[in-house]
Length: 485
Ligand code: 5AD
Ligand code: SF4
Image 1: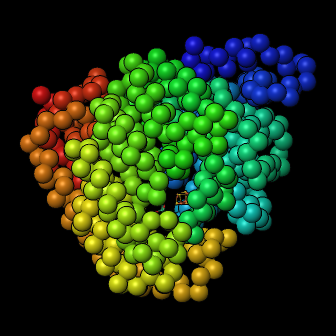
Image 2: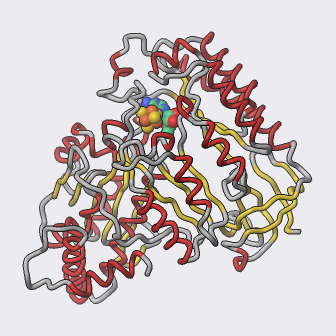
Image 3: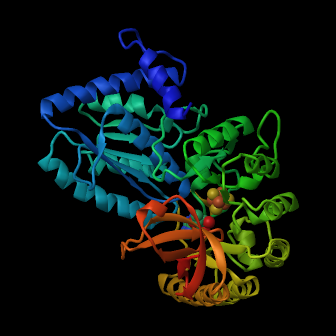
């Protein structure tokens, strides 16, 4: 039985004339049943369907959370709208860098105009940004048209908040400092029918000195292997062929469980699921990526030939101040070990430039790592000061001008190695999962190689969700044009 069906049965059985149950997920089933009535009533009053739109910022975790929000909204009777001009607008936010916050405030400003045209419209802000008190204060003060604000720890209560929001007019704010439990079995509306993410851990215990995540997502909590495996099996029986296991640091998976289980053991079990064709994971931390994990990846063809291994900096001095617990040479040795054991693996990374105290000599070290590892791709970020993190209090913040110069240097080095790595694959035939119709030319399909690179091939929508054998005919820097063989 699919997750949604199990929950649906709870909703059907619930009696909304008796008080809401205290236990989960029965409580959310009660509120969902109630939300259906409220939505129905509103639709009758309006004489038209009610629509929603969920705008997602940030990482894979947020994308997965949005699928849960969409699951509840669709289940309550709303239909997805093509734009933000809608009845129920949700911003699922990110706060990892300041520009993400600013973008949301900009979008909220525009949404207020839409609400003037459609006064019944509800506007919701949720996710990491509102786990920070200052942002909630700002919304209360200057964005009073917002109807609901809720955080990352109580997302499972969204059906309940939806009811409150539909029944009242003031701003509802529900932020928790920590999670009280992991609630399974709520409805999820997957964005892609053939691939899905699955959370294996929530939160992070690492406290890298620049990073806000441990403060907004809380301490690390693992789901049990049984829950994860059951969810993966259900996904596969529902047509999913690719699953990405998600956690802020997947290497520490299972350490907090009553019966400990390592990430390598979990991966091995997931590989055994019949019908599952490709497995990805995000994100391992270089300080504790075990030989066991490398071996499991090497020995299981189902696991994608791609390891995203955030470097952040190549300078020992900066790495220490970042609280990363590895040195430049340790990182390089690890990357070489991975390359040595797993032929054709792509190694990608995240790099921060302009961390407090960083100088051009530190960037020289970062560039040295980029060249020696030969990254297949990298996301380069300009350091953003996050209030409450240790790095924000460091006195030697780097001027914008210097940050921009450092950024350009790093970007050029990354482009050089990435192009070189991609170029070498030209002419090869590889397996690729057809994901969507090409956005620029609808006679092409965009497919993803095991190493996470994209290849565009002539084709039609019937190919979507299928594994194709594709020849990489022409390299265009970070992606390919190819043909199905
Ligand atoms: N400034 C810039 N980049 C950051 N990241 C995390 N925190 C910050 C920050 N304060 C980057 C890291 C991380 C990625 C998800 O975001 O590179 O790996
Ligand atoms: Fe942030 Fe470091 Fe945790 Fe990643 S490992 S989420 S960068 S604190």
